[in-house]
Length: 122
Image 1 (spheres, one colour):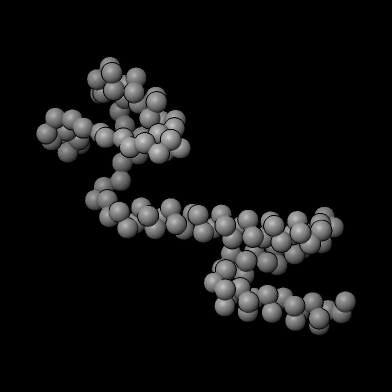
Image 2 (cartoon, one colour):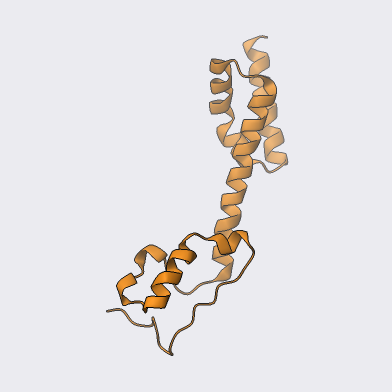
């Protein structure tokens, strides 16, 4: 296969990825082609890895967009929570909350407290 032909194929892939709206394929094509050539990977493995990268990028973008569209006024992280300030029963339940099992189970979590709880910084 001549170098010109390889170049033409890469250009075609770039154009197809633009038309099909596959930006991760465009971004990582050259890197994955070189890696596949070095490892003498089969075409199916190369294609699967490239498509996996596209799927991962879409999942991340989707997660980011869901958070953005939720229009949360403040972002709160479990790492920023002062555990010692929580009541004893809440400290125990926090361990369960941190596992994020409720997400896999499709369950909701309601965090409630006295009026004004959490509205000020110490």
